[in-house]
Image 1: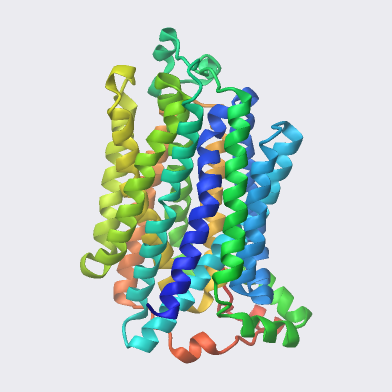
Image 2 (image 1 turned 135 degrees about the vertical axis):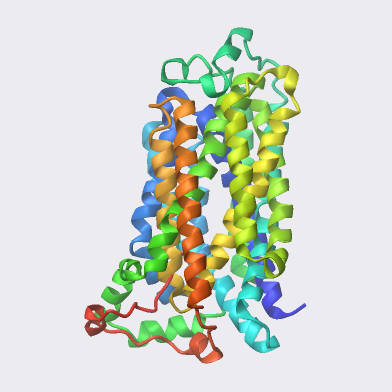
Length: 466
């Protein structure tokens, strides 16, 4: 096993551990902290803070600390959110949500930058196309990472399953599914598990999150540590401002602007499953203790398909995979629009998440890889934009969650999906006509020299993040 592959595995398993905790907790927020919509609002705060941090934190942290220590520091912000849920209230939950959000963008930007650097370096070393190696690395990452949905949700279902008093009243069923609307949100809430079981689960999540931090800090190589050290020595205030503005300056690139709908849709579709589906279908009809099992199907499907699609992309191309994801999501949305969930149809509750996992595997692996390929010389700023626009999709979806009917939310998601495919296909057409050149070893190793004078040019600053 090469050292590069070892590092990819360390990043992947570190995220697996961290999101075993956070992913399981996110899936439960709309049901666990349903009073006054507190759980969903906390998710809105998280992604709102991610948008804010996307504007300046990732390039600054990655350039000064390097990818490794940016990841370690940001992981600590995620663990704080689990502590906030131990005594859920508006103050504790909103504060820790903001802390998590500020660490979210640097975490994902550093991860994507790390994998892109590793893929390009490995490609140069083995004389292979960098974009194929990047695709494979993102496939490996998401194969391992997405399985966190299995373990985190398995923990919640097994622990909550010990409470035999959880029952769903028969009269609730008429409000489940697409018929769910503002006036009957509270009616659809099911009995919650005992508080001591919730605290047990949170204790497990905190332990797993701390283990993730230690694992990455000890075993991950600091591949850009020398560049970060040189950056701290040689760069002054001018570089701070150029780094600060790098995220926005990259918006001059038409390709990035056209990718905004695709990136935002990623937030829409993920938030729909983790918030709307879990609450209005699973919790409403069969109980909160089944949320974990439903999300396990999503995680297992997502994990396997992420690995497969990372490999398949070099043979099928991206367009075929994105089209498959679009058709799958379209079918699921239409099915959910007309399906009347009932406990007698138990198997159907797990089919939808499995299909969703297959589609999300494409949205995650291929969109991340696409950003890494199109903006290889602007990794930090490109991935900062990715996280910012994806988070905006989350914020919008969570913000209107408690104000409009579920059927309306489905129609909105379908409209965004249609716009996504139109703009994405145009990007592919443009890339076919004017291919992005491959990066060289010199491009990867040469630190970028930027000053304020360059801020007036039409060129895009080569500083990136996700």
